Image 1 (cartoon, helix red, strand yellow):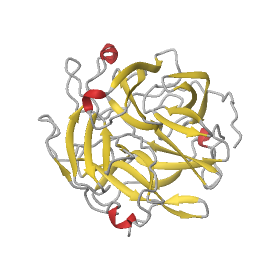
Image 2 (cartoon, helix red, strand yellow; image 1 turned 45 degrees about the vertical axis):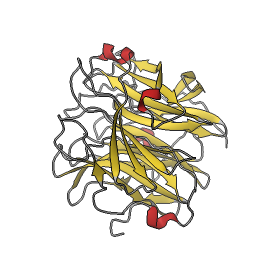
Image 3 (cartoon, one colour; image 1 turned 180 degrees about the vertical axis):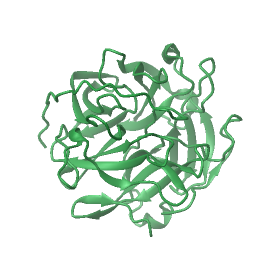
Image 4 (cartoon, one colour; image 1 turned 135 degrees about the vertical axis):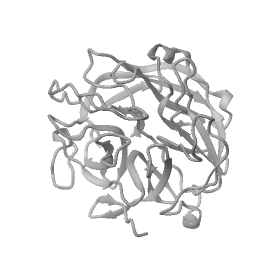
Length: 352
């Protein structure tokens, strides 16, 4: 497909700081291979809590604080790994990317494995934990993208580390920052997601400020060219963050989280384009650069703060992976739901 580099107008908007418990957060998930075409029984339950086991950290009083989950499956193993935002501690002892493992099924039980060491370069941001990891595989190498940020600002950085053995937490080698941002930039370098299209890798990222941006990756550790603005919220309205891009049937789908995290207003929206660089529109034809976005999932029943999402492809199906809060912002949980399709647009059937 054709890919266009377009300079999008920026509105110069300066967003108010969010008041949230856990930070400017997002998720990302890589697609899988169809290793089990008859694997519906091995897929996740459509509703209910996923089974989580093991200790996450003494500072967290719940059994499943899996925020911003990113799932990868080693092709020669039956293990799935979930990488998520680290335990929130302090700038003196920040929490690293936390890892869980499940054998042979997305439904769990997901067993705690521990955390990956915090890269030293991120300590300059005086953060309390690493945010919003995503893992992608290129050949035999796994690349883990993550974010660190000074709270309440766009003084932020997206870094990357790599390994050939994702389940060996001591094997990850850090390569430093891929991009950074500060007060002179109109974007916030957090919530990374990488996407490969026709052999070229791209980095999509962003939270508040002027929204979601796309860079071409020169290699897996650096970007090239100028960023393209894909989505934003002009003026007043629910801001946008945590981007994910996936492709299906000739369209690129951009999935984002909107509104204030850790509230019942947080929700997931989607738009699509026939060009990776946009313009993206929602199902009503409203541009995502103009604040558009079709609601894919919002809070219901006991699930509030639905967001931090990504889309995984496994067993020939697309799955929405996200976190939510069960009644309370302290009860952070992960959910995996199959996407249904109607006239080229995804939706979630809450009754299945």
